[in-house]
Length: 129
Image 1 (tube, rainbow, N blue to C red):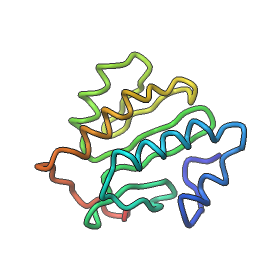
Image 2: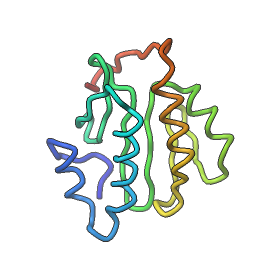
Image 3: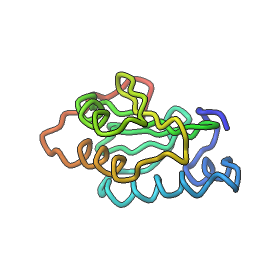
Image 4: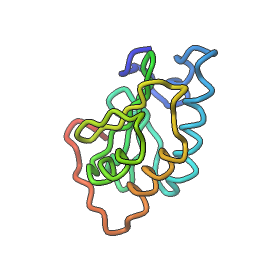
């Protein structure tokens, strides 16, 4: 599966994932829905996205052998990268290099750090949302 999908909905995006590989990404989606109360789930730039008040705060992408999380809150990314050896950090990106290596507690902490800070200010990213 390519990182950017032509799917119109997140449900369609998940239908593109091979059946034998969909369980772990589905768990990521369920965790996002659990933690991101009040955020709208939709597609943005070919990836599942979570927005509030028209601002995309997080997207994720399933690739052949990895999952990537993209957020505009770099401080949350850098705070959580230190917690795991299995992460490949980029500026606003956290990648798990193997789907089977997803640390769900770390993903939960990243989501909580990104979304529960009521003082956070998200910058509207041109081309997303």
